[in-house]
Image (cartoon, rainbow, N blue to C red; front, side, top):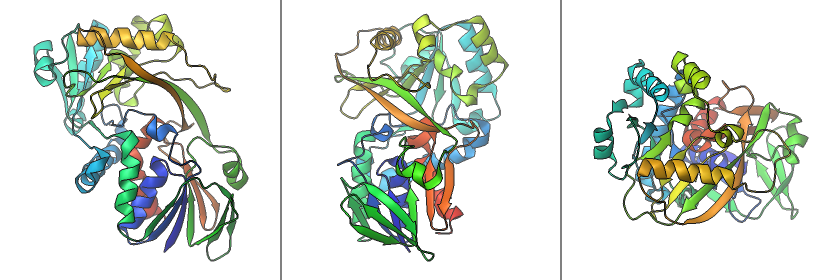
Length: 375
């Protein structure tokens, strides 16, 4: 079978990888010279710890797929580093204790650590905290180098072609397949077309299926110069308990009721996530903005908050911040919907909306789509 996949982000690339793995031919179109959206503006985290019970099995499957991919394609930078969510108050500790006692704790690899144990796992954490919830199943990939590495791997099959700087303008179902016309008038015939537009909900996406049940979310992040020591796990703060469904429960309700976030953290719906890149720098974030139109400015106050929290947990000054950025991702409105798949025509599908889970769940979403469409 011949597939045309529109979109060079993680979802488009994951679907290409699944199709190539099943012996099909894939042509992938990306309107930019290289994917520039949420796929490369994220942490690169494969985040098991906060996923809800209903999506845990799927997340663990994706984690397994990422490890297998990392073994075949070292350039993606897969590493099973795990994470530690550092708690600083009794209310946060209660959430961590409940998570460690939950029936899913073993599957997630949860263990509640005393400060001395935290420092044994991650010696760079010399700051102020009362405990740490360790998740051994969390992992990371290098988001800015993963896609080129995956494309090179697929190209070696001789069944994969990538067209950069190519914008799909129209898709016509032919009855036996579909035809894509790009912005240079070139034609691509396919048995099946998968349109993976990311956060581009207008244009071709709207022409194909009209309004879809997804929204856009804007975030701010930053990266430092190299830290002069390893940060052996990803780290999060207790505010992250508020934003991940895997921690929902009476203890989180009490946390939200009894312990307010700082004004800046509440305004920007913030949590701290921090992961060390292979080059040594720290990627730190993030904020959440849901109401469009989004500002084009990058606000400084959230960065000051994130810097202060990270320095408190590390017990030291951060290296110089060398870049800051904003990004926008697509999120299904129904929180129980992992990804939105919409059939635009008999041989045309639109797939988007995994939210902040695109990097975590990309491989398994591609695998599921391949199963769904009998590839």
